[in-house]
Image (cartoon, rainbow, N blue to C red; front, side):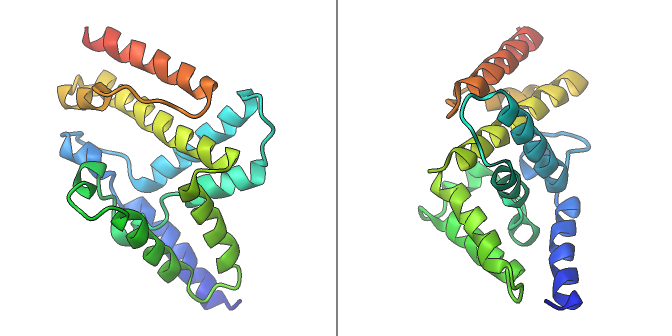
Length: 186
């Protein structure tokens, strides 16, 4: 692969540093994290969760999936989940797949990275399910941190519908975060 293609890929990853997490902006968080910060949080959370769950995992695959999970948002931006309900079913995944294909265009290793990304969306492997758990735990943790910093009552809507996780270890962490939210806002 030539260096121009590699620089193009690196720039797409770098774009996540400029892409704010829209859900926080919509809820009045003054200085919200960007997608790159969230993606790091998901990878770190997945790494830690892998240490405490009982099932054996492929750590390389886990971290690859976590690293790539929001890469399309460098092109699509972070469109919050409430907005997707107004679009046809499956359009979010289809749009993000096209973005991934655009981002990876010209890379000799595109099929391998695309396979990790597709695995995330299939939600069939232990690694992909743990990344989904890590993604939600990281979001709930960030909500608690923003609530502690600002007492922003708009963040309470994240907690209205209880979330169910794939792994009991993830569920236990969520339940503790939920308990802390309730204590903070009780």
